Image (cartoon, one colour):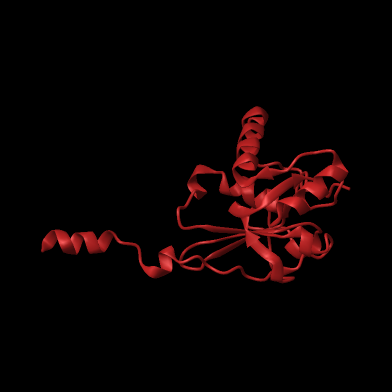
Length: 169
């Protein structure tokens, strides 16, 4: 009986395992990493939500992904969201179209304006991502491919977070 009680203690609660819903961005929101006002910048944003509902918001999808790749942030019950840019205006992403970042398709978009470093556009639909990529002569990446590319870039740059907070046009 005692082992049954211990087993019950190790089971996650429903709030820890339930996927949290995305949260809208507001003009008062600041980036969890750099403190910049999130809505002042164009391009897809990101947010990470814990199983208990604690939300961390980011000025760009790239900023969120780089934060998430840090070992201390690799929390099992974290849900990541990014904007679906096939259903959003680049200059004012629509919070009604936040999608699961792990299921999204990504395109590096150096020609687009963004908040932190080189913007990374996110899409729910692979065909829409391919169309966006073809205009830029670049390729589409899955979440895992992007994660690997970012880790490789971090290793070659010798650090994890760019201090360049300027907008790139």
